[in-house]
Image 1 (cartoon, rainbow, N blue to C red):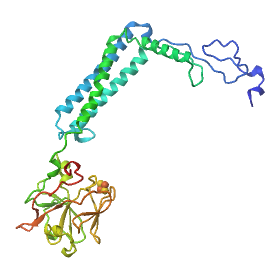
Image 2 (cartoon, rainbow, N blue to C red; image 1 turned 90 degrees about the vertical axis):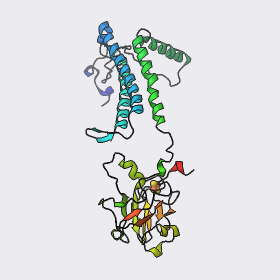
Image 3 (cartoon, rainbow, N blue to C red; image 1 turned 90 degrees about the horizontal axis):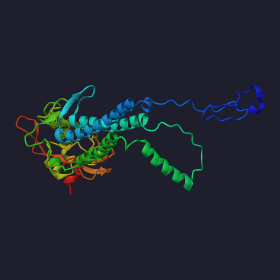
Image 4 (cartoon, rainbow, N blue to C red; image 1 turned 120 degrees about the vertical axis):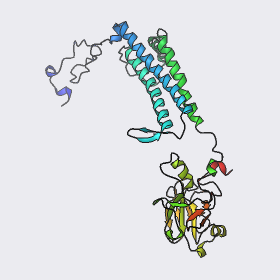
Length: 351
Ligand code: FES
């Protein structure tokens, strides 16, 4: 049923509706109720309340400044490898935690201060704007500029220098956080990627059982993961070190090994290669014993372990580094030195 079908005497009367903003359309059953009477905020009628709000806003901007200073101090003072216990996250990097916390507080306080300022101290006037064409006329543009100037005046920035100064201070300090974060991109790692925990005489330890490996522990067709003797998951830099030292060991038939150097660096067909993909550093984990290929699960780079770890497929740029091994007097497999080249992508060291 349309409004035309409703007898006029049953419709709400719009005539004489004196509420602000009310639209009086004869016979309209869904009348615009208009705006309720405007209620002034306590800050508009009580100067002491306004002062309290002003101090609260200034406090938040000041807190933001302190958090930014804390961010910079944390960046400079906290050792990058220091861990702390944070419930419920467990042991995490002290620097990451502190940088995240201080940056979060700095940003939050700027936002909270601005919102509180707008809600309690800026103009509280309610307005109704009629729709207008999208393209503003020159008069409207001029009016917008005038309104903008008026808004700046109403924000009381000139009258409240405490807010203005602390806000500019907070906004000026904030970008410093980004500057210090960019500092984290450098300097170049130098020779750090060239050195791993492998050295002459280091036993090859099974990463699952933590036992030193003997040649008879490595069977044809199996893929064994190893790390250098002396490393422990409890070490504070374990993740950094294992990312360079992780090793995979397979046993091939010596006659299947095509690369002469690989054969010389092996023990009875047992070869040891870096487990870190030379594309962007994922750990390799899939071994196909018929072809002697290993596959990186990240972007499917495939390496031939019977041919010097050569790349046979995928985006990896160079072969997997091989570790030279031998059997010591006690019958255990041990390294004869570190890798001869950087493991993983090692962009900076390959010139
Ligand atoms: S990281 Fe191995 S293929 Fe991309």
